Length: 238
Image (cartoon, rainbow, N blue to C red; front, side):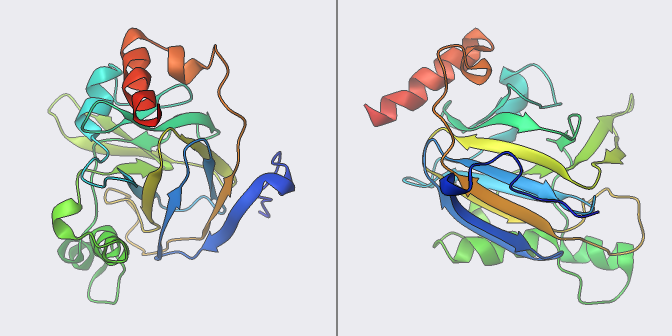
């Protein structure tokens, strides 16, 4: 399937666009107010994401608070990614995956990849994160529980996690930066993806100067907790 990643985006507003090969990593600083679109070009095996306050990377994505504050593990349009300081890093302003966001599964690593795929030069999420973070003077100690895109995971009654489904070719996720955000992605198979074949596929990343949120923006007004999160975030820029 051929996908035009920039559908619906004014070309004059795009500041960055490129294709990230399967197995590779990518990182970039996204300015407050800009939006990052990630396109699953072929319906691959998942994309793992970390994000930080680009101006003060000690502040970073907090998976536990993101789930707890929004009363659910399944994210979607109108939800946000919280930092460990109660502020908002990204808002989910668009997505076509049907809620294929995994907040619990974590990241693949070299030992697990060898066990799953056998001996080989497999690129894994944790190693990709380390390599990407090194470019920003960050390292192993800065890796926290990540978010997985384009994959849906369920919690069973015994507490186990089950991979449910992946997104379809052409699925997109739009993340609007609510502060200056350093984002890191690893385009490697989801750690729980059932396929025994290592077959990551390319994704496209597009950054553009999106319109400012309106007074009724669903991410900013979704619940009292969201309102407080944005008040804390906006205070950084007064």
